[in-house]
Length: 88
Image (tube, rainbow, N blue to C red; front, side):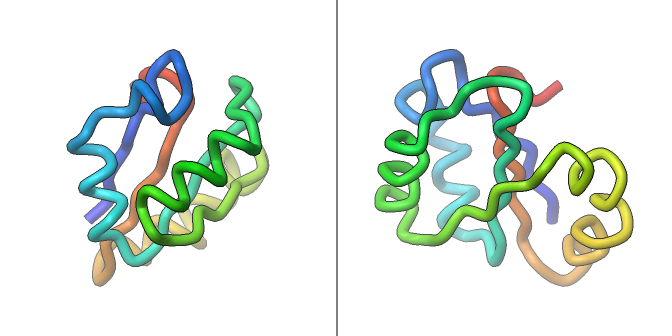
């Protein structure tokens, strides 16, 4: 399962509870921070809340490599992708 989760407009503090719950049950959690600033302090605090490591993706990893490297994992694993603001 692939979860697309918006971080909201104020970093992790405005992230929906359903998004946090999805991250907690995910095998891998990824974040993109190149389209909007998501401060390191916010990332560290979010990792503490979720209890898991969050892997930062570069623009290239998300736009070019995602389909081949990360998306196939969603067939057998729970994957969360945190996107700044609104994910769509």
